[in-house]
Image 1 (spheres, helix red, strand yellow):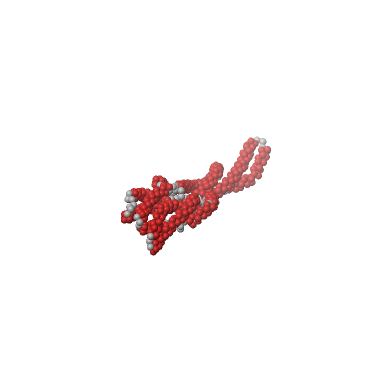
Image 2 (cartoon, rainbow, N blue to C red; image 1 turned 90 degrees about the vertical axis):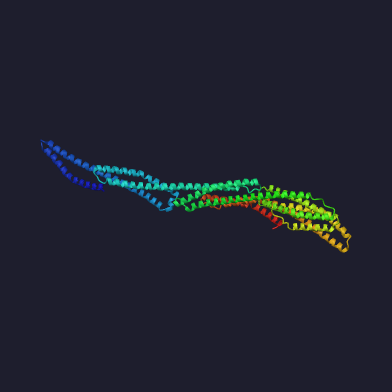
Length: 588
């Protein structure tokens, strides 16, 4: 404005000078005329005219230069004003962008906004160059104005410096925001990396637990398995501390407002905690299961050793029994002694054998598919073989005592002895359980049935001798007594034939059931293993990712798993058919 004022004043002054140009021309013409009229002292007049002309020309030149300078300065000031205005608009635009960013509240602390703020900061830094140009121009104009005696230069410089201060403040605020977001981004990245690493560690531990074989049925192997699961539990405890640290880090991020999505951050830590808890529960359950199996194996081993020793002692006592006497009284006494031996020695052993079979069968039946139970089966076979051998000796002793009675002429006593044996055997058969669907159980039932068949076969001679003696006794008896004897013999033979026929039918049913049970087991084991793996895959798919690419990958995995399930349908159909056939052969 001062320059414009000076331009107006200079223009008015130039107009005044212009008005005086006529007088100057008049003066110059009169001077020249005067010189023409004078003959002497012309030099003084010439000098006066030259001095006036020089002063006139100087005045006009200075006015021209001053006008040109003011016009140039005005143009430069106009350009500078435009540059200042544009620069101020740019600074204001950046300030508005920062204000809009700050107005986002919690979302403004999202590390994803870092690139946006960095771009804004780069834009602000880019204003430094035009600011330097404007400042230099302002300084130049202020210097020239001071030299020319024009005021306002300091005000111009203050305006530029005020804009520079705004730019400095804006850049400082941007640097502060970027630093905060960079720290937040670093903290979030470290947290995400920590969560990802822990998730991988937990998955690795789950895989380690999944690859562990089911509890064995051998004491040494089970002890090794217990050591392995204890090592795994220690690893889980170590990871548990790291998970607790991750949960605390997530809470700190949420509390400090650095987490862009507090809910997602908490879901990450909750997911880790659930995964850890599930893994810890599974590991503890396996530890408990292994301890239980080890205790059961020790119990079985101890009971088996005790039973084998008892069977050995009983076998020795049977071996030391006196030969069957020839007198009826002696034979009766021996029968009573032998009955007492059965009650006091054999029956407790029978209960112990049942307990050992129950313990051993329980261990075998509860074993997972693929677990080697051959050692247990051999131990059970050893006990049962020893027990069957002892029972053979006991039956042989019974038979010899019965034959001794027959040979000593005591038909009724022999008849009563065989009738009692038949009653005991019928009770034993009546208490037999239906064929089992479990292959190992039905196999043991078949072995028991073989022993029953052999026992019946051994009694065949005693039955034939009794029938022959009974026929002789009946031939010499009166008609009433003869009919009673024949009726007793017929009833005895019918019961024996029914036992023999029933034993044969059960043997055939057990043989058929064992064949089908073996087929069922062979088909069931791989299906169960596939189901366990598939169930784990399905469980792993329960957590739905938020990333689009991972969602697409999860969809592909789901389709692959679905196709795999459909491919297994024929195997499941075959298994169902075999299971139906097996159910038709066994009890409920």
